[in-house]
Image 1 (spheres, rainbow, N blue to C red):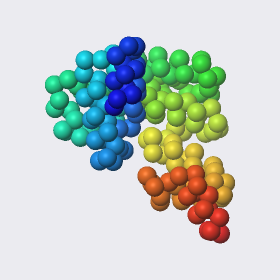
Image 2 (image 1 turned 135 degrees about the vertical axis):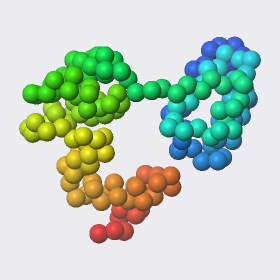
Image 3 (image 1 turned 30 degrees about the horizontal axis):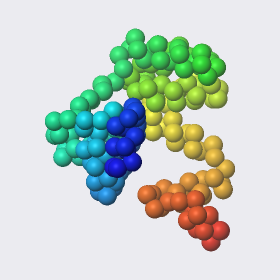
Image 4 (image 1 turned 120 degrees about the horizontal axis):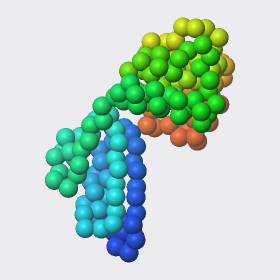
Length: 170
């Protein structure tokens, strides 16, 4: 808190914290301290997450924005932009179709573009979960084993712990 206050008293600081829904209690306590520091300074915090603890969203000095899915026009525009920037060409599938299937979910739009650019099939997965499942099925056995270990370790995962456990398991 003291370092942030010192920096923000003399210059502007912009901090983005993503996936706040994954923070444990101690991390929320630290973040709450940073939020208190932000008041009256040049510190701007942007905190994103699926859900944020209700005690954090009732503070008068915080703005809580709920972002709805993109509308069809914005979804098509995002699909066009991603397609152009990344050279992901959805062979045989219109960007409007990808936008419609995505339901306005930006991550799903991106994943459908990737899926369509690497798979020959005309059928698009109807859910983000299916896109990810299909992508994971392309991993080799060693990578799948490591991914399973990471998923079991969850928040306790670190590179050192992963290396230790991976060396022990056949």
